[in-house]
Picture 1 (cartoon, rainbow, N blue to C red):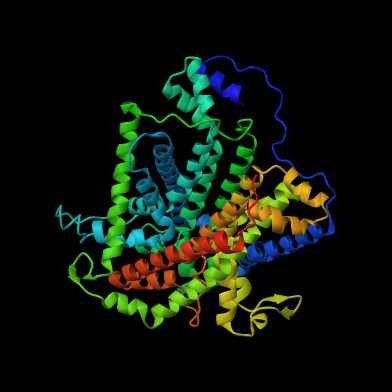
Picture 2 (picture 1 turned 30 degrees about the vertical axis):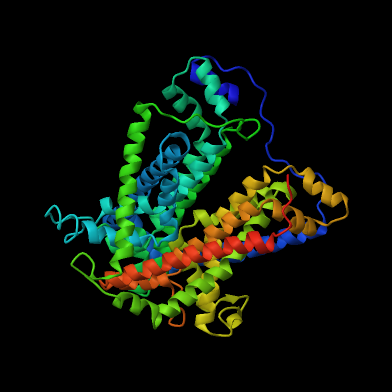
Amino acid sequence: MTATLVAAASGQAPPATPPPSSGRYRSRARTDRSVIVLGVAVAIVLLLLIGYPVVSLLSAALAPDGLAVLGRIVTEPANHRIVLNTLVLGLIVGVVGTLVGFLFAFAQVRIAFRGKRVLHLLAMVPIVAPPFAVATAMITLFGRNGSISNGIFGIKGDIYGLTGLVIVLSLSFFPVAYMNFRGMLESLDPSLDEAASGLGAGKLRIFFSVTIPMLVPGFAGSFLLLFVEAIADLANPLVLGGDYTVLASRAYLAVTGDYNTSAGAAYSLTILLPALLVFLVQRYWVSKRSVVTITGKPTGHSEQITARSIRTPVLVIVGTISALIVTIYLTVLTGGFMKVPGVNNEFTLDHFTFVLTGLGSKAMTDTATLALIAAPIAGVLGMLIAWLVVRKLRRASGLLDFVGMLGLAVPGTVLGIGYALSYINPTIIFGVQILPALAGGTAAFSGGIAIVMVYITRSLPSGQRAGVAALNQIHPAIEEASTSLGAGSGTTFRKVTLPLIQSALISGLTFAFARSMTTLSPIVFLTTPGIKIMTSQILAEVDSGRFGNAFAYCTVLILIVLTLILIINLLVRKVIFRGRTHRR
């Protein structure tokens, strides 16, 4: 593959190469009983987390009321417009967010400039903040009475509709693409560029013929994630959509306004189909392209680009977006201290008093508790699936990897309605009511269980992918040595494998907790009077026009996420893995 890329960059014919061998190495030792038991247990867990809710949603969508809605979606022009709006929004956000993430990563890794640590922090801020915090700040800054649009330029800004949604969703979700591209760019072998340059290729040709082809999986994966997140996002279309109606908001209104779960399931099914199609196409396309670099590890450091023709335009674009991010989050952080942000900027602590007492304190406690329960389960489950896929399973590895990643492909709105149908309403299996009787008959407790399960499902793919990547960099002989000394697979995984992939585990735990604390689309259908979730409370405050309370909620939420992420990292590094990290 290296020779092919270099030859392509230099304009020469690529040399003949033998077909690449499989890059995945599995132990040839006979699968022991504990692995079989573990594989069956993981399969059952995934069935409960993903399979059963999706089947429940399909069952409701194909009921008479759901079929009637599906028929109207196919025949009525108004519904055609809603479907088209959803697809257009997903495609534009997928492209824009992926490009923004790539530019930030390219600047961070390849461009020579000061302030890279600040740029990295700015790129990571949206991960620890609820996505619709950006929407609320955009209204305050650029809305009809915005402090910038009206206060400075004297115009009635119109941030509502497709334009506002693209800006907000791209700024909210691009950090995932940034992290993906940053890791890939840091792993690229600089000898590829040097070899192509030695054969006479210019910088621009090397970029398009060597660098970009090696990043194809990153582009495909980032686009997939941003497309799915955009078509399933619920809060931002409710806040900023205006007349631009999408399927997620239509499903939400069908369930909460019309009390018609079958109609909501039908609209959700319409979201699910394009998401799964893009997911399958992406996996098939990437699997057909070989982008290995023989060792997979760089042999040196990439040359920092100083040429103005490349450096200036990239830094101008990245700097402009960074300035917008700073302005937005400063608005979020300061808005909670203003009586009416953007209208009456007089200092007040009333909004924080509201958040830190009564329902606000309960929302903080409930949200943090459920997220702390879900994060370690999602992190460890992701590592287990990665271990089974890379090391232990053969024929079933592809299927297990695919099912584990469905938490990424199935939109949040779809999961939320599926879980409401499966675990909040009475669940009947073979004539026996399983839930909420299993949860003691209380809706609040069953709702809490369902929310934890949603958090696990949505966070699992990131930990799984991190685990797969980490295990592919560890030679199996290390684990085989443990097995040859008499340790079983479970002991080897616990005492050898986990300490070696602790960085991947920490990454999975961190993302799982942050994602759980800031998610809304799946859990808005699962909250009950006995359970308060901070993102749901923020949406309620925004709907009521109480932006000061919403900003105060967002500020407290960001502080909680940052504090607990730090504590989680310290616990894992200093307590769980203390003295157990093996040097490779």
